[in-house]
Image 1: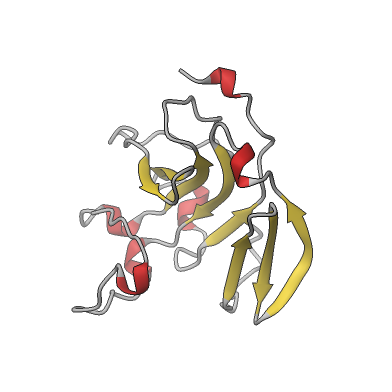
Image 2: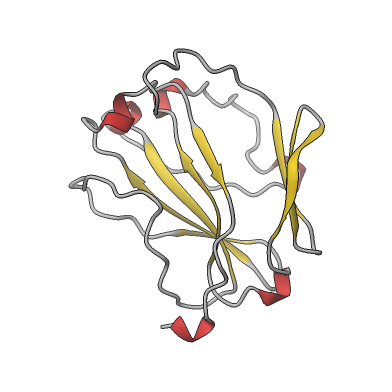
Length: 170
């Protein structure tokens, strides 16, 4: 990340993936750039990486309002508990659309310094009869350059992988 970036203003972003395979992002209600063509949902036969996130440090996020349901409006949620040490470090997430089954995930987009806590099992969330959302995550080392660069900011990376041959299934 460039050191000269001191402040980045947040903005509302909506990402949409349609049954036609079209993926697009809206910023402030206006489409940003040209739509991407991802595979049709029925064509996804193995994990298909759709996005990655470099989180802000957990203590940089506003606390979730007590009494407010994480699943309001039909939403689904997973909560990752972090201890006091984990509140001060960034996490790296990768999100995949996948049919159910056992697959070998592609290597992460980022090489990271290993953290002694071990790699957690990927999280899974059912989206439809055909697809689940798989989330792989890991902690950045506290002393890595990415952990110390603007710890209050998060970075989303959008883009689709090439379709993976489902014969790679374990």
